[in-house]
Image (tube, rainbow, N blue to C red; front, top):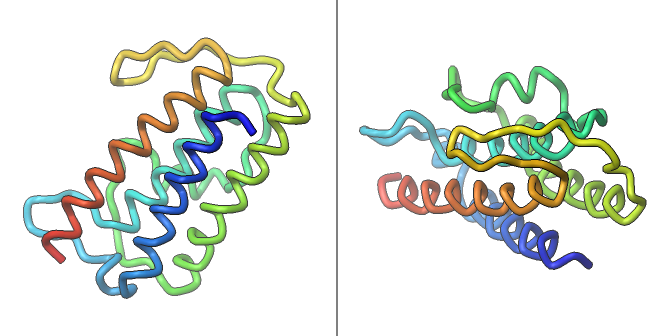
Length: 151
């Protein structure tokens, strides 16, 4: 398996532990001084991976446009998520990565629309995107660890 995808698998396992070790109430809580919560950050990782890897490759995403719109950069939680939504996010953490691994092995990522991230990284191909996803998920894991201190 590609080492970049192995890193992403480990990252997703860490995010799953946050879901498994916190109540729905804790996952939804926005501590004072923060603009989002644990579950928004986790879902944001899924949405961002789908946009950076699939949309920019011209491939269909495994999540709805509504999901992406709800968790894209610049958004914040408008209301608490339900248990059903939490279950969906938990499932998506695994299924989106498994499908990405399969699609990568099947060489489905042929085209890529070059994109410069808000952090200044220019992604020229899917390999760049996968590497950046790991960096991005690391940033949000750090934010999650910070939020966790206040819930």
